[in-house]
Image (cartoon, rainbow, N blue to C red):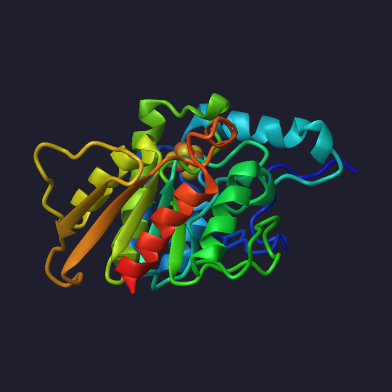
Length: 273
Ligand code: SF4
């Protein structure tokens, strides 16, 4: 029997936050409305449910579902998620990890960010060594993995072709990120940006909850640090940390190594403690 694609909301996929009644955003205006509603209601679970069924970017919807239908040879027997990856982790996180977008055969297959791909293998091993993840691996939703005082989000929640979202897609997805940050900012003390795209996405996210923007805007680099005074009601300050993305290309070429990731996440753990 052919599979339903993408996975129908509330049909039993582990960690699926949505139900058949979850409203679906069909364009950028609906993303803004649905994200703002969930943020106003203070409902992080509903926000992640709405993220996970979004269909606002036609090119990305087509791509993520095509990949889920065709699959790759080594995953041919597996069912693919084929939906956006929602924010995942601790609701009262002190460390927020901001990535670019799910991988076509990683998060787009498993339904959980950085799960089931080489980048995630390197990332979760480091998070575990630094006390931010319960297990050294993250292979599938429902595998028992758990973030400890941390939360993971993506600037763009659908897998893009060649890992490159368009500017309009980034902007369309931004309200999901802003709303999620608004709901966890009370506890967040450190934001780790994985790569330059995430670093750029962090500024509008911070501005959306009232952070003053430094001028000139600090440049991204591995180990870059910026301390930002928090707006009233959000603690005293937030530390923004830059980290090279643990992409296969970066790890194969040695541009980023496990030790380099450990340096950043150990720093994040200490600063958040
Ligand atoms: S990238 Fe974001 S806004 Fe676009 S369809 Fe996916 S979840 Fe929706």
